[in-house]
Amino acid sequence: MALRQNHTTVMRFILLGLTDQEDQKQLLFAIFLLIYSVTLVGNLGMIDLIRTSSPLHTPMYFLLSVLSFLDICNSSVFTPMLLTSFLTTDQSISFAGCVVQMALMSVHGTGECLLLAIMAYDRFVAICHPLLYHTIMSKCFCIQLVVVTYAVGMFISAVQTGNAFSLPFCGPNIIDHYFCDIPPVLQLACSDTTKANIILLFFSTLVTVPTVSVILVSYAYILVTICRMRSLEAQRKAFSTCASHLTALSLFYGSVFLVYVQPDPESASAYNKILSVFYTIVIPMLNPLVYTLRNKDVKAAVQVRVLNLSRKSSL
Image 1 (tube, rainbow, N blue to C red):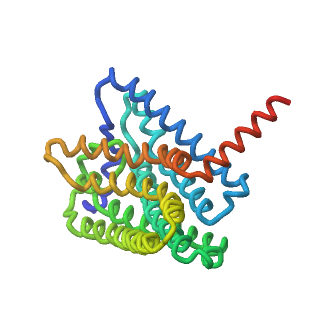
Image 2: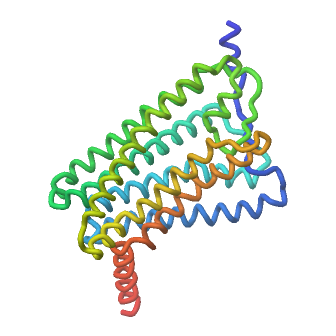
Image 3: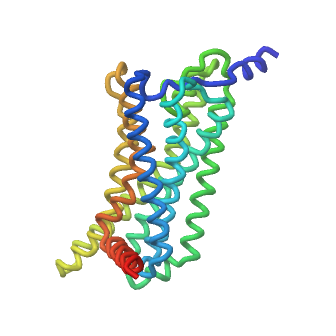
């Protein structure tokens, strides 16, 4: 009976957020509102551009449109609540709200890891097996890959969220973060969290190791294939098709990796918050910019769209 009471003691968690300085909150609100607006406009614009531009009706850009959708979802899990925290004194989140936020974070975070690996495989097929590209990366196969991505994401999310919230929470309820991340939530549990941390590590590794392996192997084969090309123009073209994806990979995995490289423990919390802001809120804004600025096909489609709009406005 006592254990059951412990499970129901904590009804709300307190999120300490990014700052407790009132004079900083208005500035941060304006900055994050701008970032969120650019994220929505950029990613929705990318999805619409890919949908309406026939030159972009290829497997690579279909996967890019899914990445844009994931970025919108991922940013929307964190940013609206963060914006609200800058405007109100109530920094709390309900127990159920914390569960939902963690579940959605896990779904979309896992989904993005898997999708980036799929995009690396797509580049491998395009460069190493160009004659079979459209046969292998058929529309049906791409859709199946996306469905599997979400299925795996939901499975991992259910396991990770269930693992965290199956523990009793009977007292401390202050989370030193701006969202319900798994490690700080586990720190509040009233029982031993060794098993929960092992499960967290196991399933995180289960996602990370295969996806990173696919990415590394794909780009190893791509590099070997490019080096064997006799034409410098062919090499340049092959490298240019990978540039945007490599930039997106560097931004995502670089920031996620640095979260787990702990500096001085006294500054670790602030350090992790800054990096978490980068990979949960800033990267979803940067991805459409990266693919627009570093991709000739997208830039050409944007120019055609702007030209058509200018012609319509002149009529």
